[in-house]
Image (cartoon, rainbow, N blue to C red; front, side, top):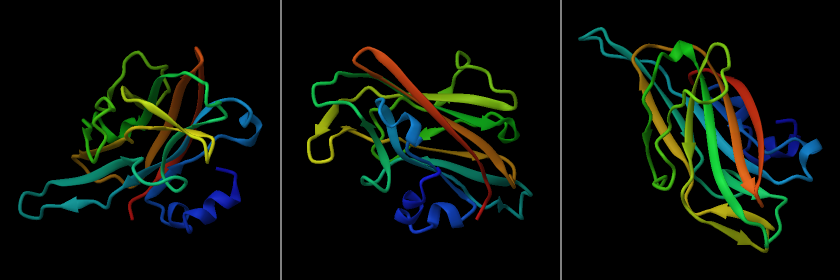
Length: 191
């Protein structure tokens, strides 16, 4: 997230509003390798309280749906002749959120439901949730990028108020038989 120009593209919304974390494009040192790039907005909602029952809850949303270059996912640095294969996103969510269950939303039907992944590498203090893409990729010659047929969108409601939430987003894509990955992390706060 070191690219100042990307911050200006989203008009400061992902940076000024503490409730939003945008997991952004790859760092410059890795720019020559294929990568699963893009913007996935992580949004932590404000606490809702039911004064009648005393229950409280917080929503957490991961939204990759939107238009390039402001939102979405794409494979960069892969030629038009590339074979794009296995694609997945693993979202590490701080254990302060408990064990949430995510639901798919929007047009994310070609992404598996974001679910707890006991096989993901362990990160102390986090639970791993993984989604895999089963759709197709299309090359866009104008942008020289590959785009998936659908984009991810997941949401959950945590049965308590959360004031901060640590998250790590790890992305993986197979290009011509080689797996490429990178990750971003940050702290979410309710709006």
